[in-house]
Image 1 (cartoon, rainbow, N blue to C red):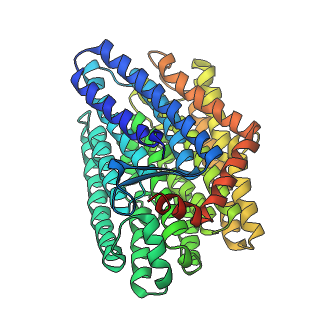
Image 2: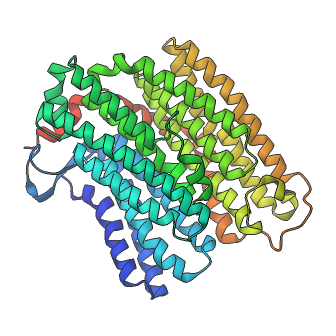
Image 3: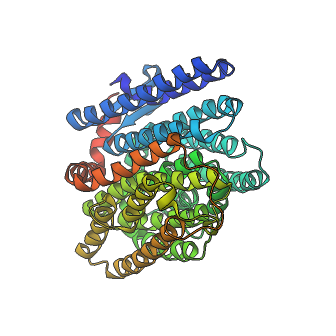
Length: 492
Protein backbone atom coordinates (compact mmCIF):
# COMPACT_ATOMS: atom_id res chain seq x y z
CA UNK A 1 0.00 0.00 0.00
CA UNK A 2 1.34 3.44 -0.97
CA UNK A 3 0.17 6.82 0.31
CA UNK A 4 1.13 8.30 -3.05
CA UNK A 5 -2.23 7.18 -4.45
CA UNK A 6 -4.25 9.58 -2.34
CA UNK A 7 -2.14 12.65 -3.17
CA UNK A 8 -3.40 13.24 -6.76
CA UNK A 9 -6.88 13.65 -5.26
CA UNK A 10 -5.94 15.30 -1.96
CA UNK A 11 -3.53 17.97 -3.25
CA UNK A 12 -5.89 19.62 -5.77
CA UNK A 13 -8.78 19.31 -3.29
CA UNK A 14 -6.73 21.09 -0.60
CA UNK A 15 -5.60 23.68 -3.14
CA UNK A 16 -9.22 24.37 -4.13
CA UNK A 17 -10.16 25.03 -0.49
CA UNK A 18 -7.13 27.27 0.08
CA UNK A 19 -7.87 29.23 -3.10
CA UNK A 20 -11.39 29.90 -1.84
CA UNK A 21 -9.95 31.18 1.44
CA UNK A 22 -7.40 33.37 -0.39
CA UNK A 23 -9.85 34.49 -3.05
CA UNK A 24 -9.10 38.17 -2.47
CA UNK A 25 -5.34 37.76 -1.96
CA UNK A 26 -3.80 37.44 -5.46
CA UNK A 27 -0.22 36.77 -4.32
CA UNK A 28 -1.27 33.95 -1.99
CA UNK A 29 -3.44 32.45 -4.74
CA UNK A 30 -0.54 32.44 -7.17
CA UNK A 31 1.69 30.65 -4.66
CA UNK A 32 -0.98 28.01 -3.97
CA UNK A 33 -1.59 27.44 -7.70
CA UNK A 34 2.10 27.03 -8.55
CA UNK A 35 2.92 24.81 -5.57
CA UNK A 36 -0.18 22.62 -6.01
CA UNK A 37 0.19 22.24 -9.80
CA UNK A 38 3.88 21.34 -9.60
CA UNK A 39 3.25 18.97 -6.68
CA UNK A 40 0.49 17.06 -8.48
CA UNK A 41 2.59 16.79 -11.64
CA UNK A 42 5.62 15.47 -9.74
CA UNK A 43 3.51 13.05 -7.68
CA UNK A 44 1.87 11.68 -10.84
CA UNK A 45 5.26 11.09 -12.47
CA UNK A 46 6.59 9.36 -9.34
CA UNK A 47 3.43 7.26 -9.10
CA UNK A 48 3.68 6.14 -12.73
CA UNK A 49 7.35 5.25 -12.21
CA UNK A 50 6.47 3.31 -9.04
CA UNK A 51 3.75 1.34 -10.84
CA UNK A 52 6.19 0.52 -13.66
CA UNK A 53 8.83 -0.78 -11.26
CA UNK A 54 6.72 -2.34 -8.49
CA UNK A 55 3.42 -3.26 -10.15
CA UNK A 56 -0.16 -2.25 -9.33
CA UNK A 57 -0.49 -0.09 -6.21
CA UNK A 58 -3.43 0.06 -3.78
CA UNK A 59 -4.50 2.33 -0.93
CA UNK A 60 -7.22 1.36 1.57
CA UNK A 61 -8.93 4.45 2.99
CA UNK A 62 -9.32 4.14 6.76
CA UNK A 63 -7.49 0.81 6.66
CA UNK A 64 -10.67 -1.04 5.71
CA UNK A 65 -9.93 -4.15 3.62
CA UNK A 66 -11.42 -4.65 0.17
CA UNK A 67 -14.18 -5.19 -0.77
CA UNK A 68 -15.73 -3.60 2.33
CA UNK A 69 -13.95 -0.26 2.33
CA UNK A 70 -13.12 2.39 -0.23
CA UNK A 71 -9.97 1.56 -2.13
CA UNK A 72 -7.79 3.46 -4.58
CA UNK A 73 -5.98 1.47 -7.24
CA UNK A 74 -3.18 2.60 -9.50
CA UNK A 75 -2.22 0.51 -12.52
CA UNK A 76 -0.38 1.61 -15.67
CA UNK A 77 -3.61 2.83 -17.28
CA UNK A 78 -4.34 5.02 -14.25
CA UNK A 79 -0.77 6.31 -14.17
CA UNK A 80 -0.81 7.26 -17.85
CA UNK A 81 -4.12 9.09 -17.52
CA UNK A 82 -2.94 10.95 -14.40
CA UNK A 83 0.21 12.23 -16.10
CA UNK A 84 -1.74 13.26 -19.21
CA UNK A 85 -4.26 15.11 -17.02
CA UNK A 86 -1.40 16.89 -15.25
CA UNK A 87 0.25 18.04 -18.48
CA UNK A 88 -2.97 19.48 -19.88
CA UNK A 89 -4.12 20.93 -16.55
CA UNK A 90 -0.82 22.76 -15.93
CA UNK A 91 -0.91 24.24 -19.44
CA UNK A 92 -4.57 25.23 -19.05
CA UNK A 93 -3.83 26.91 -15.71
CA UNK A 94 -0.97 28.93 -17.20
CA UNK A 95 -3.15 29.82 -20.18
CA UNK A 96 -5.96 31.02 -17.92
CA UNK A 97 -3.83 33.87 -16.53
CA UNK A 98 -3.63 35.41 -19.99
CA UNK A 99 -7.17 34.47 -21.01
CA UNK A 100 -9.27 35.69 -18.07
CA UNK A 101 -9.54 39.48 -18.00
CA UNK A 102 -10.26 40.24 -14.38
CA UNK A 103 -8.63 39.07 -11.19
CA UNK A 104 -12.11 38.48 -9.78
CA UNK A 105 -12.79 35.92 -12.53
CA UNK A 106 -9.55 34.12 -11.68
CA UNK A 107 -10.49 34.12 -8.00
CA UNK A 108 -13.53 31.98 -8.85
CA UNK A 109 -12.12 30.06 -11.83
CA UNK A 110 -9.05 28.57 -10.17
CA UNK A 111 -10.70 27.01 -7.08
CA UNK A 112 -13.32 25.32 -9.26
CA UNK A 113 -10.61 24.23 -11.69
CA UNK A 114 -8.79 22.41 -8.89
CA UNK A 115 -12.04 20.74 -7.79
CA UNK A 116 -12.36 19.54 -11.40
CA UNK A 117 -8.77 18.28 -11.39
CA UNK A 118 -9.36 16.43 -8.11
CA UNK A 119 -12.48 14.74 -9.45
CA UNK A 120 -10.72 13.78 -12.67
CA UNK A 121 -7.84 12.16 -10.79
CA UNK A 122 -10.27 10.39 -8.49
CA UNK A 123 -11.98 8.88 -11.54
CA UNK A 124 -8.71 7.31 -12.66
CA UNK A 125 -7.85 5.93 -9.22
CA UNK A 126 -11.09 4.67 -7.70
CA UNK A 127 -11.50 0.93 -7.42
CA UNK A 128 -15.21 1.21 -6.62
CA UNK A 129 -17.92 1.54 -9.27
CA UNK A 130 -20.12 3.78 -7.10
CA UNK A 131 -17.26 6.12 -6.30
CA UNK A 132 -16.67 6.32 -10.05
CA UNK A 133 -20.20 7.77 -10.21
CA UNK A 134 -19.36 10.21 -7.39
CA UNK A 135 -16.23 11.42 -9.19
CA UNK A 136 -18.21 11.87 -12.40
CA UNK A 137 -20.66 14.09 -10.50
CA UNK A 138 -17.84 16.21 -9.07
CA UNK A 139 -16.51 16.67 -12.60
CA UNK A 140 -19.95 17.55 -13.98
CA UNK A 141 -20.67 20.19 -11.32
CA UNK A 142 -17.21 21.70 -11.78
CA UNK A 143 -17.47 21.83 -15.59
CA UNK A 144 -20.93 23.42 -15.39
CA UNK A 145 -19.66 26.07 -12.96
CA UNK A 146 -16.64 26.87 -15.13
CA UNK A 147 -18.72 26.89 -18.32
CA UNK A 148 -21.20 29.47 -17.01
CA UNK A 149 -18.64 31.46 -15.00
CA UNK A 150 -18.55 34.47 -17.34
CA UNK A 151 -22.37 34.67 -17.57
CA UNK A 152 -22.50 34.78 -21.36
CA UNK A 153 -25.91 33.86 -22.83
CA UNK A 154 -24.45 31.19 -25.14
CA UNK A 155 -22.50 29.71 -22.25
CA UNK A 156 -25.61 29.48 -20.07
CA UNK A 157 -27.49 27.79 -22.94
CA UNK A 158 -24.61 25.34 -23.42
CA UNK A 159 -24.62 24.77 -19.66
CA UNK A 160 -28.25 23.67 -19.80
CA UNK A 161 -27.34 21.11 -22.47
CA UNK A 162 -24.45 19.93 -20.32
CA UNK A 163 -26.71 19.54 -17.30
CA UNK A 164 -29.25 17.65 -19.44
CA UNK A 165 -26.50 15.27 -20.51
CA UNK A 166 -25.36 14.95 -16.90
CA UNK A 167 -28.82 14.18 -15.53
CA UNK A 168 -29.45 11.58 -18.22
CA UNK A 169 -26.07 9.88 -17.74
CA UNK A 170 -26.41 10.00 -13.93
CA UNK A 171 -29.82 8.33 -14.04
CA UNK A 172 -28.53 5.61 -16.37
CA UNK A 173 -25.39 5.17 -14.28
CA UNK A 174 -27.34 4.73 -11.03
CA UNK A 175 -29.68 2.25 -12.73
CA UNK A 176 -26.71 0.25 -14.00
CA UNK A 177 -24.99 0.36 -10.60
CA UNK A 178 -28.21 -0.73 -8.90
CA UNK A 179 -28.63 -3.62 -11.33
CA UNK A 180 -25.09 -4.88 -10.88
CA UNK A 181 -25.28 -4.52 -7.08
CA UNK A 182 -28.56 -6.44 -6.97
CA UNK A 183 -26.92 -9.25 -8.88
CA UNK A 184 -23.47 -9.40 -7.23
CA UNK A 185 -23.96 -7.70 -3.84
CA UNK A 186 -20.77 -5.65 -4.16
CA UNK A 187 -19.52 -2.44 -5.79
CA UNK A 188 -15.80 -3.09 -5.61
CA UNK A 189 -14.67 -3.54 -9.22
CA UNK A 190 -12.20 -6.34 -8.49
CA UNK A 191 -14.81 -8.17 -6.41
CA UNK A 192 -17.37 -7.64 -9.17
CA UNK A 193 -14.98 -9.21 -11.66
CA UNK A 194 -14.75 -12.33 -9.51
CA UNK A 195 -18.46 -12.66 -8.75
CA UNK A 196 -19.76 -11.89 -12.25
CA UNK A 197 -17.40 -14.14 -14.19
CA UNK A 198 -19.35 -17.41 -13.51
CA UNK A 199 -22.59 -15.68 -14.66
CA UNK A 200 -21.28 -13.80 -17.71
CA UNK A 201 -24.02 -15.30 -19.89
CA UNK A 202 -26.85 -14.00 -17.71
CA UNK A 203 -29.14 -11.53 -19.58
CA UNK A 204 -28.98 -9.00 -16.71
CA UNK A 205 -25.19 -8.80 -17.03
CA UNK A 206 -25.42 -8.09 -20.76
CA UNK A 207 -28.11 -5.46 -20.11
CA UNK A 208 -25.99 -3.73 -17.47
CA UNK A 209 -22.97 -3.80 -19.79
CA UNK A 210 -25.07 -2.14 -22.50
CA UNK A 211 -26.19 0.52 -20.03
CA UNK A 212 -22.58 1.24 -19.13
CA UNK A 213 -21.73 1.68 -22.82
CA UNK A 214 -24.56 4.20 -23.02
CA UNK A 215 -23.45 6.08 -19.89
CA UNK A 216 -19.78 6.24 -20.77
CA UNK A 217 -20.47 6.75 -24.47
CA UNK A 218 -22.56 9.80 -23.57
CA UNK A 219 -19.69 11.24 -21.55
CA UNK A 220 -17.24 10.48 -24.37
CA UNK A 221 -19.54 12.15 -26.95
CA UNK A 222 -19.82 8.96 -28.96
CA UNK A 223 -22.33 9.06 -31.82
CA UNK A 224 -25.31 9.37 -31.54
CA UNK A 225 -24.80 10.67 -27.97
CA UNK A 226 -22.67 13.64 -28.99
CA UNK A 227 -25.46 16.24 -29.03
CA UNK A 228 -24.08 18.25 -26.11
CA UNK A 229 -20.42 18.53 -27.13
CA UNK A 230 -20.30 21.04 -30.05
CA UNK A 231 -22.20 23.77 -28.19
CA UNK A 232 -20.35 23.17 -24.92
CA UNK A 233 -16.94 23.16 -26.62
CA UNK A 234 -17.58 26.25 -28.70
CA UNK A 235 -19.09 28.26 -25.83
CA UNK A 236 -16.80 27.28 -22.96
CA UNK A 237 -13.88 29.47 -21.84
CA UNK A 238 -10.90 28.21 -23.84
CA UNK A 239 -8.99 26.64 -20.90
CA UNK A 240 -12.06 24.49 -20.27
CA UNK A 241 -12.45 23.63 -23.96
CA UNK A 242 -8.83 22.41 -23.87
CA UNK A 243 -9.53 20.34 -20.76
CA UNK A 244 -12.77 18.93 -22.17
CA UNK A 245 -11.25 17.70 -25.41
CA UNK A 246 -7.80 16.96 -24.05
CA UNK A 247 -8.75 14.81 -21.09
CA UNK A 248 -12.36 14.98 -19.85
CA UNK A 249 -14.14 13.25 -22.75
CA UNK A 250 -11.40 10.60 -22.52
CA UNK A 251 -12.75 9.77 -19.07
CA UNK A 252 -15.71 8.08 -20.75
CA UNK A 253 -13.37 5.98 -22.89
CA UNK A 254 -11.27 5.19 -19.81
CA UNK A 255 -14.37 3.89 -18.04
CA UNK A 256 -15.33 1.69 -21.02
CA UNK A 257 -11.82 0.24 -21.04
CA UNK A 258 -11.90 -0.35 -17.28
CA UNK A 259 -15.23 -2.17 -17.11
CA UNK A 260 -14.69 -4.28 -20.25
CA UNK A 261 -11.15 -5.28 -19.32
CA UNK A 262 -12.02 -6.09 -15.72
CA UNK A 263 -15.72 -6.66 -15.00
CA UNK A 264 -17.15 -7.74 -18.38
CA UNK A 265 -14.11 -9.55 -19.78
CA UNK A 266 -16.20 -12.46 -21.07
CA UNK A 267 -18.50 -10.06 -22.95
CA UNK A 268 -15.78 -8.53 -25.10
CA UNK A 269 -16.56 -10.74 -28.08
CA UNK A 270 -20.32 -10.21 -27.62
CA UNK A 271 -20.02 -6.41 -27.84
CA UNK A 272 -17.11 -6.19 -30.26
CA UNK A 273 -19.12 -5.66 -33.46
CA UNK A 274 -21.41 -3.17 -31.70
CA UNK A 275 -18.50 -1.07 -30.38
CA UNK A 276 -16.66 -1.14 -33.72
CA UNK A 277 -19.83 -0.08 -35.54
CA UNK A 278 -20.31 2.83 -33.16
CA UNK A 279 -16.64 3.74 -33.61
CA UNK A 280 -16.96 3.87 -37.40
CA UNK A 281 -20.17 5.93 -37.27
CA UNK A 282 -18.56 8.30 -34.74
CA UNK A 283 -15.44 8.72 -36.88
CA UNK A 284 -17.31 9.41 -40.08
CA UNK A 285 -20.16 11.60 -38.82
CA UNK A 286 -17.84 13.67 -36.64
CA UNK A 287 -15.62 14.37 -39.64
CA UNK A 288 -18.61 15.32 -41.78
CA UNK A 289 -19.74 17.72 -39.09
CA UNK A 290 -16.28 19.30 -38.92
CA UNK A 291 -16.07 19.84 -42.68
CA UNK A 292 -19.26 21.95 -42.59
CA UNK A 293 -18.10 24.35 -39.87
CA UNK A 294 -16.92 27.95 -40.32
CA UNK A 295 -16.21 28.54 -36.62
CA UNK A 296 -12.84 27.12 -35.58
CA UNK A 297 -13.93 25.99 -32.10
CA UNK A 298 -17.01 24.20 -33.46
CA UNK A 299 -14.83 22.58 -36.14
CA UNK A 300 -12.48 21.33 -33.42
CA UNK A 301 -15.44 20.13 -31.35
CA UNK A 302 -16.77 17.95 -34.17
CA UNK A 303 -13.21 16.82 -34.81
CA UNK A 304 -13.04 15.65 -31.19
CA UNK A 305 -16.14 13.53 -31.79
CA UNK A 306 -14.49 12.01 -34.87
CA UNK A 307 -11.22 11.29 -33.05
CA UNK A 308 -13.05 9.53 -30.22
CA UNK A 309 -14.14 7.09 -32.92
CA UNK A 310 -10.51 6.19 -33.64
CA UNK A 311 -9.88 5.55 -29.95
CA UNK A 312 -13.02 3.42 -29.64
CA UNK A 313 -11.94 1.46 -32.70
CA UNK A 314 -8.63 0.57 -31.03
CA UNK A 315 -10.52 -0.42 -27.88
CA UNK A 316 -13.05 -2.44 -29.88
CA UNK A 317 -10.35 -4.65 -31.37
CA UNK A 318 -9.94 -6.08 -27.83
CA UNK A 319 -6.34 -7.04 -28.55
CA UNK A 320 -3.08 -6.04 -26.89
CA UNK A 321 -2.00 -4.19 -30.04
CA UNK A 322 -5.35 -2.44 -30.47
CA UNK A 323 -5.63 -1.35 -26.84
CA UNK A 324 -2.01 -0.16 -26.83
CA UNK A 325 -2.73 1.87 -29.96
CA UNK A 326 -5.86 3.34 -28.32
CA UNK A 327 -3.87 4.40 -25.26
CA UNK A 328 -1.18 6.05 -27.39
CA UNK A 329 -3.98 7.77 -29.32
CA UNK A 330 -5.46 9.09 -26.06
CA UNK A 331 -2.10 10.59 -25.06
CA UNK A 332 -1.26 12.11 -28.44
CA UNK A 333 -4.74 13.38 -29.24
CA UNK A 334 -5.12 14.92 -25.79
CA UNK A 335 -1.98 17.00 -26.21
CA UNK A 336 -2.66 17.98 -29.84
CA UNK A 337 -6.30 18.92 -29.31
CA UNK A 338 -5.53 20.97 -26.19
CA UNK A 339 -2.98 22.91 -28.27
CA UNK A 340 -5.51 23.48 -31.07
CA UNK A 341 -8.24 24.74 -28.74
CA UNK A 342 -5.79 27.09 -27.06
CA UNK A 343 -4.75 28.33 -30.50
CA UNK A 344 -8.42 29.00 -31.27
CA UNK A 345 -8.72 30.85 -27.96
CA UNK A 346 -5.96 33.21 -29.04
CA UNK A 347 -8.07 34.20 -32.03
CA UNK A 348 -11.01 34.77 -29.69
CA UNK A 349 -8.91 37.12 -27.55
CA UNK A 350 -7.64 39.02 -30.58
CA UNK A 351 -10.97 39.70 -32.31
CA UNK A 352 -13.70 38.42 -30.02
CA UNK A 353 -14.70 35.59 -32.37
CA UNK A 354 -13.45 32.25 -33.66
CA UNK A 355 -15.18 32.60 -37.02
CA UNK A 356 -12.36 31.81 -39.44
CA UNK A 357 -13.60 34.38 -41.99
CA UNK A 358 -12.86 37.14 -39.47
CA UNK A 359 -9.19 36.19 -39.27
CA UNK A 360 -6.27 35.75 -41.60
CA UNK A 361 -2.66 36.67 -42.33
CA UNK A 362 -1.44 35.33 -38.98
CA UNK A 363 1.78 34.32 -40.70
CA UNK A 364 2.71 38.02 -40.78
CA UNK A 365 1.05 39.03 -37.51
CA UNK A 366 2.63 36.19 -35.50
CA UNK A 367 4.95 33.70 -37.24
CA UNK A 368 5.33 31.85 -33.94
CA UNK A 369 1.57 31.33 -33.66
CA UNK A 370 1.49 30.15 -37.28
CA UNK A 371 4.23 27.60 -36.58
CA UNK A 372 2.61 26.21 -33.43
CA UNK A 373 -0.78 25.99 -35.14
CA UNK A 374 0.80 24.20 -38.11
CA UNK A 375 2.55 21.65 -35.87
CA UNK A 376 -0.74 20.86 -34.11
CA UNK A 377 -2.62 20.63 -37.43
CA UNK A 378 0.04 18.29 -38.83
CA UNK A 379 -0.18 16.20 -35.67
CA UNK A 380 -3.94 15.73 -35.80
CA UNK A 381 -3.73 15.16 -39.54
CA UNK A 382 -1.28 12.30 -38.97
CA UNK A 383 1.71 13.81 -40.77
CA UNK A 384 5.16 12.57 -39.67
CA UNK A 385 7.25 13.14 -37.62
CA UNK A 386 4.49 14.24 -35.23
CA UNK A 387 3.02 11.84 -32.69
CA UNK A 388 -0.23 12.02 -34.67
CA UNK A 389 1.30 9.89 -37.39
CA UNK A 390 2.14 7.11 -34.97
CA UNK A 391 -1.24 7.23 -33.21
CA UNK A 392 -3.07 6.62 -36.49
CA UNK A 393 -0.48 4.19 -37.86
CA UNK A 394 -0.74 1.99 -34.77
CA UNK A 395 -4.54 1.85 -34.82
CA UNK A 396 -4.61 0.98 -38.53
CA UNK A 397 -1.85 -1.62 -38.13
CA UNK A 398 -3.68 -3.26 -35.22
CA UNK A 399 -6.83 -3.38 -37.35
CA UNK A 400 -5.04 -4.97 -40.29
CA UNK A 401 -3.30 -7.50 -38.02
CA UNK A 402 -6.70 -8.47 -36.62
CA UNK A 403 -8.32 -8.62 -40.09
CA UNK A 404 -10.74 -5.78 -39.27
CA UNK A 405 -10.65 -4.46 -42.81
CA UNK A 406 -13.95 -2.52 -42.87
CA UNK A 407 -13.14 -0.33 -39.81
CA UNK A 408 -9.64 0.28 -41.18
CA UNK A 409 -11.10 1.40 -44.52
CA UNK A 410 -13.40 3.86 -42.73
CA UNK A 411 -10.46 5.14 -40.67
CA UNK A 412 -8.37 5.78 -43.79
CA UNK A 413 -11.17 7.64 -45.56
CA UNK A 414 -11.89 9.77 -42.48
CA UNK A 415 -8.16 10.57 -42.20
CA UNK A 416 -8.33 12.25 -45.61
CA UNK A 417 -11.31 14.36 -44.55
CA UNK A 418 -9.50 15.24 -41.31
CA UNK A 419 -6.43 16.43 -43.17
CA UNK A 420 -8.63 18.42 -45.56
CA UNK A 421 -10.56 20.45 -42.98
CA UNK A 422 -7.50 21.00 -40.78
CA UNK A 423 -5.28 22.29 -43.59
CA UNK A 424 -8.13 24.44 -44.88
CA UNK A 425 -8.62 25.99 -41.43
CA UNK A 426 -4.88 26.72 -41.13
CA UNK A 427 -4.86 28.36 -44.54
CA UNK A 428 -7.86 30.56 -43.70
CA UNK A 429 -6.42 31.69 -40.40
CA UNK A 430 -2.75 32.02 -41.27
CA UNK A 431 -2.39 32.65 -45.02
CA UNK A 432 -5.44 34.50 -46.36
CA UNK A 433 -5.54 38.28 -46.18
CA UNK A 434 -7.95 39.82 -43.69
CA UNK A 435 -9.99 42.98 -44.10
CA UNK A 436 -9.20 44.50 -40.72
CA UNK A 437 -5.95 44.01 -38.83
CA UNK A 438 -6.30 43.14 -35.13
CA UNK A 439 -5.51 45.79 -32.55
CA UNK A 440 -2.62 43.69 -31.21
CA UNK A 441 -0.89 40.35 -31.74
CA UNK A 442 -1.27 37.34 -29.47
CA UNK A 443 -0.17 37.56 -25.84
CA UNK A 444 3.00 35.69 -24.91
CA UNK A 445 1.12 34.23 -21.91
CA UNK A 446 -1.23 32.53 -24.35
CA UNK A 447 1.45 31.50 -26.84
CA UNK A 448 3.69 29.70 -24.33
CA UNK A 449 1.29 26.84 -23.38
CA UNK A 450 0.34 26.38 -27.05
CA UNK A 451 4.03 26.16 -27.93
CA UNK A 452 4.76 23.72 -25.12
CA UNK A 453 1.98 21.37 -26.23
CA UNK A 454 2.87 21.67 -29.93
CA UNK A 455 6.53 20.91 -29.27
CA UNK A 456 5.54 18.02 -27.00
CA UNK A 457 3.59 16.63 -29.96
CA UNK A 458 6.81 16.64 -31.97
CA UNK A 459 8.83 15.13 -29.13
CA UNK A 460 6.32 12.30 -28.71
CA UNK A 461 6.63 11.61 -32.42
CA UNK A 462 10.42 11.72 -32.61
CA UNK A 463 10.82 9.67 -29.41
CA UNK A 464 7.66 7.58 -29.77
CA UNK A 465 9.26 4.22 -28.95
CA UNK A 466 9.36 4.51 -25.11
CA UNK A 467 5.76 5.78 -25.03
CA UNK A 468 4.64 2.93 -27.30
CA UNK A 469 6.42 0.48 -24.99
CA UNK A 470 4.61 2.02 -22.01
CA UNK A 471 1.18 1.85 -23.64
CA UNK A 472 1.84 -1.72 -24.79
CA UNK A 473 2.78 -2.70 -21.22
CA UNK A 474 -0.40 -1.02 -19.96
CA UNK A 475 -2.42 -2.94 -22.56
CA UNK A 476 -0.85 -6.25 -21.54
CA UNK A 477 -1.68 -5.46 -17.91
CA UNK A 478 -5.29 -4.71 -18.84
CA UNK A 479 -5.62 -8.08 -20.59
CA UNK A 480 -4.31 -9.78 -17.45
CA UNK A 481 -7.10 -8.73 -15.04
CA UNK A 482 -5.90 -11.28 -12.49
CA UNK A 483 -3.10 -8.85 -11.59
CA UNK A 484 -5.61 -6.12 -10.69
CA UNK A 485 -7.84 -8.54 -8.77
CA UNK A 486 -4.91 -9.96 -6.82
CA UNK A 487 -3.56 -6.50 -5.97
CA UNK A 488 -6.95 -5.43 -4.58
CA UNK A 489 -8.36 -8.55 -2.96
CA UNK A 490 -5.02 -10.04 -2.04
CA UNK A 491 -4.32 -7.05 0.19
CA UNK A 492 -7.09 -7.95 2.64
